[in-house]
Length: 83
Image 1 (cartoon, rainbow, N blue to C red):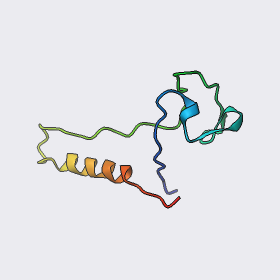
Image 2: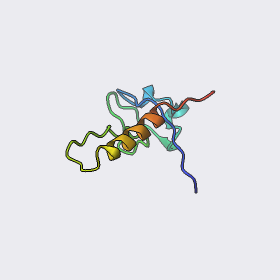
Image 3: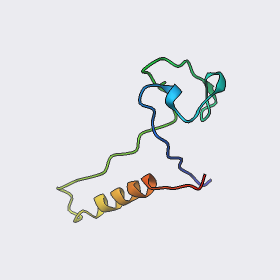
Image 4: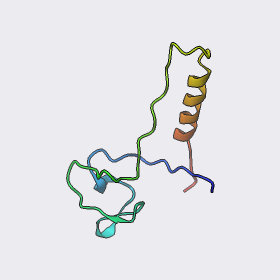
């Protein structure tokens, strides 16, 4: 099965700031009840942070790994939609 990516801003404080937070305290992604606790995001939250860019000075590949990794992250971050 093919995979896809949805890029959203991670809420800073709690689920109520999330674009997937729905009526009746439900997570629109996980389809689970959310008890919104101020300043806490549940451990089961399906939204994961983007990986960090890579900067390995001691790799013997001339930086090709880092370049490819960083280009992939940049491509994901710059996904635009017409929604």
